[in-house]
Image 1 (cartoon, rainbow, N blue to C red):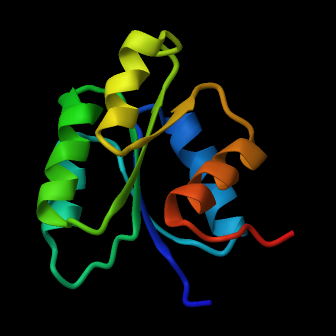
Image 2 (cartoon, rainbow, N blue to C red):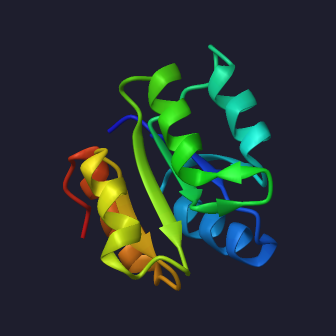
Length: 127
């Protein structure tokens, strides 16, 4: 299988580093940013492949939901996973799911992260 590319937008440094390590260990190529502005810059780069974007719902410079909408506008084939530690209520994550985005509540384990990424891609996870 071709190496898949993930854009990770997470403002919390420790979680950003751990998530990046999980993804790389699973064989993904990653681009890691800490703001919506940097995520949009990465998405706007036509030579940078992005198959999946993982974004926090609450970012210091904007909404992860707005970022997800912008990402799908720029790249209609992108898959989006939105994460949040504040959004366990259905009123928060239901609009994300209705928009076609996957939702991953924080905190999450490596297996949960990888399962939702593979599910978003529509591919079976290697055992």
